Structure formats: C-alpha cells, structure tokens
Amino acid sequence: MKHKEHLSRKSFLIKAAVVAGGIFAPSFLNKFFNNPLKKYRNPVLLNAAQPADGRLVVITGPDIKKQTIEKMAMKALDQFGGMKSLIRKGMNVVIKPNIAWNSPPENAANTNPDLVEIVARFCKEAGGRVTIFDRTCSSARLSYKRSGIEDAAKRAGVNIEFIDERKFINVKVPNALNSEILSIYKPILDADFVINMPIAKHHSSSRLTISMKNLLGVIGGNRGSLHWNLHENIVDFTKAIKCDLIICDCLRILTNHGPNSGTPEDVKETRTLIIGRNPVTVDAYASTFFVKSPSEIKYLALAYREKMGEINPGKMNILKLTV
Image 1: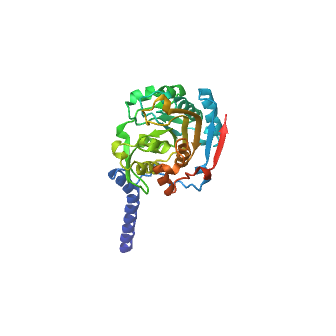
Image 2 (image 1 turned 120 degrees about the horizontal axis):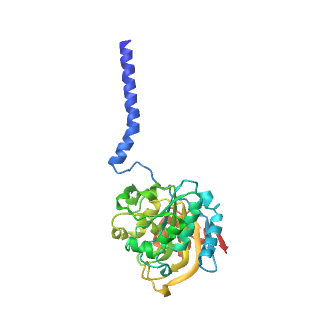
Image 3 (image 1 turned 180 degrees about the horizontal axis):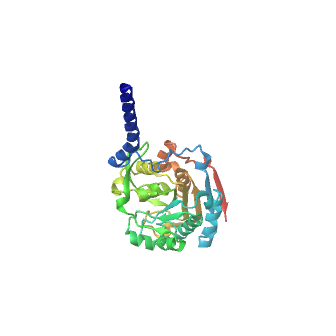
C-alpha cells in the first residue's frame, strides 16, 4: 500500500509540474524572448482566391467637398454592410492615415483630413473606441496640425495621439523576404479593428506609396535602414500587420516629386476612393492612376508572387460606383 501510495503521490507531483509548466512557461518565455510566442495581429497570408479579400469598391464623385466625400464613403461602405456591421460596440479601433509631413491638404502629401474625420465619426457612431496615430517624418506636432488631421479628430470626437517610442515591440514576420523581425507599434497590434487610410502618391524610392508602404508609419527603429531592400521590406510590413479595412484616398493624388516635394502642377484631382480588405489588391488598383501595369511596381510584383493578392485589374472583383 505504501509503495502504491508513493507512486500515486509521485504521479500527482509530475502531473502538477507539467500543468504548471504549461501555464507559466509560455508567459516566462514570452517575457524573456521579447514576445516570440504571443500572437498579435500577424495574419495568415491573404489568399487572392478568397472573394471577400479581393473585392474592391471604387467610387468617384463630382468634387471633393466634404459633403460629397461623406456620400462617397457611406455609399462605398454600404457595399461591405456599413460600418456598423464591421465594428461592434466597445471595439478598440485604430485608424492609420498618412500624417507624415508638415504640409497642408492641398499638397496631397497626407491623407485628406475630411475623409479621416468622416471615417472616424462613422466608427464612433458604430460604438468603436477610436484612436488615430502615425510615426511622422516631419515634426509630429507640426504635421498633425498642418495636415488638418488633428482638428479632424477633434471634430469627430475621437482620440489622436503621438507615437510613444516606448511602445514598440519586436515581432517575427511570417515567411519574411528581408526583415525576419520588425519593431512594430504595439497599439496597432492590440487593436480589434485596423483601418489603413493612405493617400496614393508618387514616392522617390518606392515609386509609389499607398497602403502597404503606409505601414512604415507604425514601424520602429531607423527608418533610413528600412530603405535598403525597400520593396522586400514593404511586403514584410504587410505580412506582419493585419489591416481589416483599407480606405485609399485618391481624392487628390501626388503624381510626381513625392512623397512631400510636389508642386501644384504635380497634384491631380481624381475624386476617387478605393475601399477593400486586401491591401495588395487595393494598392494594385490605385497604382493604375500612375503606371500602365501594377507589375511595374516591384513590391506589388513580389506580393503577387507571395500569393498575397491579385494585382491584375482585369482579374479583380471590382464594383464601380458614382455619387
């Protein structure tokens, strides 16, 4: 009996140790190795064969007045069931526009502030807790103010915050092309719903900056070093950070001398919004305002090779609307 009791007690202790190890080891290792085990918003690679991922709504208006932009945004979002079907009450919603430059809206260097205000208000009305941020190139305080986006957030009644450099964490990139580990802003990884709101414009290094490159605004570390193998890194940004909705500002586009040195002659009013769930497909369609074929843009060609989305407009599921 004593021998059996000893074995029973020994078995119990072994089982308890295994259970405790299962509970505490991941937490310990996560802390020790800077969260390699924690799964934030790293997506499974987007598959162009999935209709919901590849669907685009392209809507054009007669002008870019605020009331017209609101009608465009509402009509386009209705094709996805409306914002209230996408966002549930209490959701932590992050809106990531381009606020990189100390430049006014008419220069088309940053996302249109009226569009940001309208989308933020829609999210708030749906019950979301909305935060807007960007890691700027120019002074953050000047960029937030002169872009008009700081005031837009206030009008919408949502939170806009400056990037806190202490909140970047290292994240492993699945199937990375160049950057196996990226320093990413934790609040975007913790969000329940992320809306990527780029402006489509020329870029001197990557040729174009749209939603995929807009994610550089939540990447930490030395921005200049990421411009080595830039096209591969842009693909890696997109692999590491899941965006739930892309609302691409093509109301005004910067056709040359981007990202921030354009003249009035470089700004073209295209009065268009492109909305979708797949950043590769959104960017590929937006690129047609600038180039003959999206495959001319290296990061789009790489993303297509990685099976992250369709880049051939002739094969896209596109709904074109007007207001």
